[in-house]
Image (cartoon, rainbow, N blue to C red; front, side, top):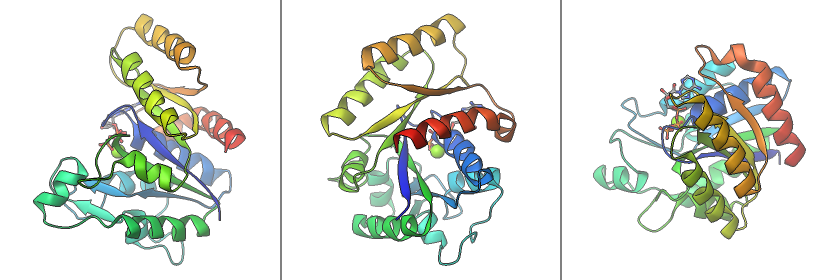
Length: 231
Ligand SMILES: Nc1ncnc2c1ncn2[C@@H]1O[C@H](COP(=O)(O)OP(=O)(O)OP(=O)(O)O)[C@@H](O)[C@H]1O
Ligand SMILES: [Mg+2]
């Protein structure tokens, strides 16, 4: 069984895909058999996760990059309706089978050196009427990397997320601050200082606004090394 972690965010749209893409690229250039999985995606008209396609493209691999790995492993559930998974699934009258997600995860992770799982929204997003993302992370005993949208509001969102992860004994590998959104530089700097101090947590990296993620390989190599030390 290889190693795995989940890239979670302080919210939806905070840069989980961007960070997952940079990390998958970094792992693969380093010669690791690394893969990406997104358990559930919504708002995808093609029936397959746009996030996964984007990440594979950045990493320079195709959907069938490894024997035995299918679209189903990469993205077990995809819905057109753009909403929280529990609601998209209801709109489409298609049940999300969590035991299937778990077995596809185990199968995929067993074939990889490293499997990066991109989270869905924030950690308390409901995947079904009863089960939240954090419940599945806990069931699979996976550590997380937390991506913070470094703007006004980040302190509260980050501390809430750290608090709830710790309350469930989920290991947090560290934080990645995403500076790709507009916000004053003073606030961005203070967010990093304040969140690491009050959250008593390691900052593994900081990413700028990026036109091409691959140009920032050095930044992602640094984050990857921090992750590997803690995995
Ligand atoms: N550092 C950055 N540089 C350039 N663009 C960015 C950066 N961070 C985020 N973006 C853009 O902001 C949007 C949201 O980022 P992203 O898709 O990575 O968020 P997410 O957390 O994966 O969202 P979701 O919850 O929908 O999966 C995307 O269009 C992305 O390209
Ligand atoms: Mg995403």
